[in-house]
Amino acid sequence: MGTNFNPSIHQAVAVPTHSYFDDMNEDFSMVDTDLFASLMRRYNATKKKLMEISAFMKEHSEETKLLDLFFRGNLEGRDARAISSFHYNRLFNTEGAIKALDANCWSEALALTKIMDLLPAKRRNEWNNNIYELNTPPFTEDNVRATLLELFAQRKNYFAERVDGIFRALSHEHVTNRPEGFSKRLISYIRYSVILVSSDVAHIEDLRHVVATLLKREAPPGHSIAMYNLINDIYKTGRTGEWFDIDGGAFKIKVFLKGTVHIDIHPDIAWQLNRVLAHLYPQAIPSQFKTPKKQAKNIKIKPLLQPLPKSILLALHKINEKRPARSECTHYYGLPIGHFDDKFARERVIDTLTAIGGQASDNDVVWFDYDVSEVINEIVFSGVLPDAKSHQFYPTPEALGEYAASLLEVDLTDIALEPSAGTGRLAAFLPKGQTTCVEYAALHCDILRAKGFDDVHQADFLKWAPQHAGRFTKVLLNPPFTGGQAEAHLDAALTCLAPGGRLVAILPSGMASRWRPEKAQQATVKWMPTIHNAFPGVGVSVTIAIVEK
Image (cartoon, rainbow, N blue to C red; front, top):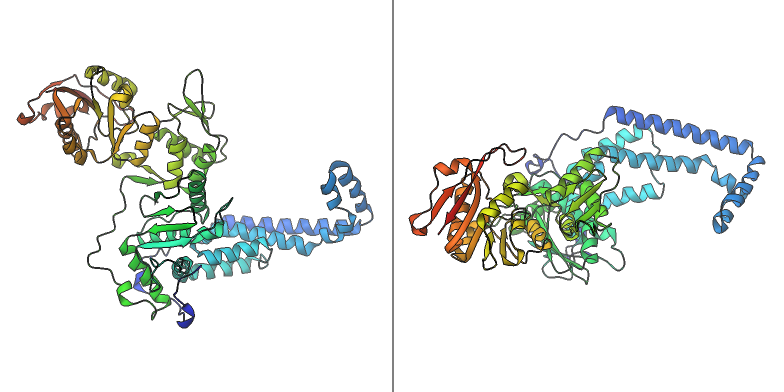
């Protein structure tokens, strides 16, 4: 796998300390001194025990043959025959045991410093292979400190190597991939039969890190496993041929059954990647590929999305494999979350499940009023949740929603609308077969459909409303409150109301003194008494408007 670009004809040069890299984070602390000292103490103590055990077994070589009786009596078949006194001289050799100890401690040291997150895929694979094959340097304090300091010192070069590795991994068979450098559409190959080949996905994970760095965002934690799980799930769930946003729209991918992966990046990201390549191969990248196009717009990453940590996504993936079970008594779906060693991770998982409509119980089960499986898959695929604060998403409390819906007086002949429907807490009081839901967040739309709403539109309601003027006989809404959004949503919802129809809106209490329908709407408004502390934890007072045409 590679492009037509041949680096052998261009002499690679060391990446200079250039202003382009100056904004890279300089604060790469190595590791907490106490943790490092603790690791060295454990290493030395374990090494001492290994040598003592080896010396004991050699001193009692005749007696160790009695261990054969333990193996024969307590192991079965091939396991019992695999170990015998014939192997003891090799089995208790200190050299091999210390190599294994060295490899284990190097792995732990790299994990403590998170240095693997800095390395390009090729160097990560080299370290992983050396650890697996017990081919690491002796684990001494001098060796460890010198190695880690050198790795940190080379981080800017590694960033360029990471970009170069991504470029080399692109398919050379597709003309979309330009031999001169990156373009906005990239195509790569992966191998998948029964399982996905993890090394094929490493460069896509590298792309996540690089794009995050260029956008001055926090780099995704970990390496390779997040994209591996995502693409593996796409295959397993039959979602090939669909576009998926990565890290809240930083870039997007589409996986095909034949093994190709299409990757779309912003043109501005493409030329920044080419600028990095140009540091490695200054004569190989034409100037037009490392200069931003004048017509390129500013990079716009989708707002209103909250990236979730890799550990939480992995936990959600594991939990979802259990599949929620439906209670015959309550008709609710129970999702066991299992045991967590990390209290913070457990709370974050419960918060995430609560954000998509779950209710936690005391027995480590989160309950849903719909089958949540596909929605959790979407979270794992995208790696994000709609951000409640920027969405102004505050689910309507049940009692308030029920009261507002009762004022709407929907009958069997009505056509109802719930704009900015969220996860359907308010729409739950409307007949599903007669209700249209409009919602900006794609994940919330999936939840609405899972709850049985068939007519769901993913759209900005303020842009959607003018195309549906006078269509609905009943409208029920709880709009965003800040920045004038409540007034804007109420005006837009009123245009969707048919003559003779009724609209009921939950609104900030202050609107009762300042909002009136426009004369052209020929509508009247009635304000209900103020309700204080209507939304738990928010401390806002609301009123309900009943508007009739």
